Image (cartoon, rainbow, N blue to C red; front, side):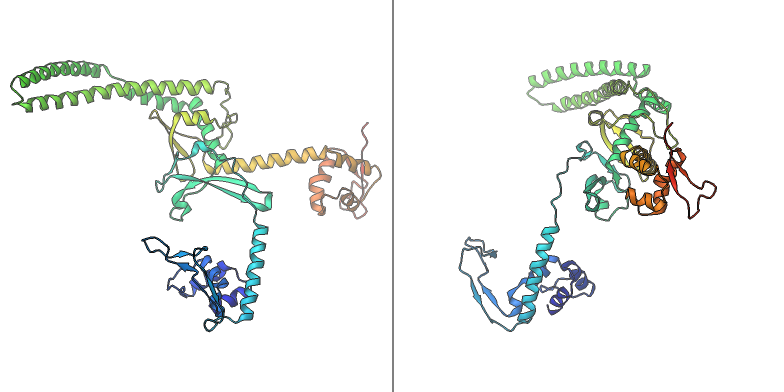
Length: 431
C-alpha cells in the first residue's frame, strides 16, 4: 500500500499506478491479478491505512437473505481513531487526501459533457455485417476537443471494437455516399441490367414448368377427392384405417409446397420489377452517367434514407470497404467505390475547399486594405506586419503575395531580381 501512496505523490495517475502494479504482478488486497482504478482510489482514501477504523460501515441487511450492503444510515457508525497500527504515516495520508481532492476538482473542471449526438444515421442500425468475422457492424462517435468538438462518426464490427477482428472502420459519410453510388450504378451500369435480366429469367416459370404445375394442380385435386372419400369411409368405420388419411394428407402437403414454390418465384419476380421501377422513378432526375478516375459518379444524389430503409435488407462490408447490398426482394449488387477511393475523394474535396477559401480571401476586405496600403512601395516584412495573418515569409508569399502578383494586382520594384534584399512591392491601380 505504501507503494501506491508514494507513486501517487510522485504524480502518477491511478491508471498509471494500476498498469504498474499489473506489470509487476503485484496482487490486489483480495489476491486478484487484475487491478482497477476504483480499487486504487479506495485505497488512497481509506482511513484504515492510517490506523483508524469505521465500525458498521457495512451491514448484512434486514431481510431473510443475508447480504452485505453499505450502511446509508440504517445503523449508527462509529469512528475509532488509532484502532490499529498505521501503514501510512498521518502526514502522508493527509497530503494524499488533498492531492486526491485537487485532482478530482481538476478532472471535473476539465470534463465537458459530451454534446448530444444528432448525426447518427439510424437507417444503418443492425443492417451491416463484417465479411471477415460475420459480426454485426455498430456505431461509434469520437469528438476532437482540440478541433472545436469536431465529431467523427464511424461504423465498425463489434469484434473489432474488442480487438478480435482487424477489419477497418468506415466513416458514416462513406456509407451514405456508397449507397448513393449504388443507386447510380443500378440505373446506369449495363452489367447490372444483365445481372437483373439473368436473375429474373431464372425466376420466370418456363413452359415445361407451367405444364408441371398444371399436372400438380390436377394431382392435388384428385388427392383431395381421395382424402375426402377416405375421411368419409373412416367416419363410417369409426377410424379403423387412419393410416390412409395420414398418407393422403402428407402427399397433398408435398404437392402444395411445390406449387407454392412456383407462386413464390412469381411473387419475387413481381417484387423485383416493382423495386427497380421505384428506384428508376426516384433517380429519374439524375441523367449524368459520367464518372471520375476514382469510379465516382459525378452527379450522384445525397443519401436517401427512404430508399435505403424500403429496399435494403442487409449489407456485407468487404475487406477493402466495398459493400454488397442484399435487397428484400433477393437481388444483390455491389457499389462501384471502395474506402480507398473515398479517402482520396475526401482529400481532393478538402483541397478544392481550401483553394476556394483562398480565392475568397484574396477578394476580401483584408487583402483590399493591403492593396491600398501598398499604393506606396512596401517591404515584405511591412506587408506581413500590416496584414498580421502569416508570420512565416514563405507562407505569406505562397498564399497571398505570389497569387496577387500572378493576378497582376501587385508588382515588384526590381522585377529582374525577385530575391533582392532591396525588393519592395506596390499595388497596381485599376485602369
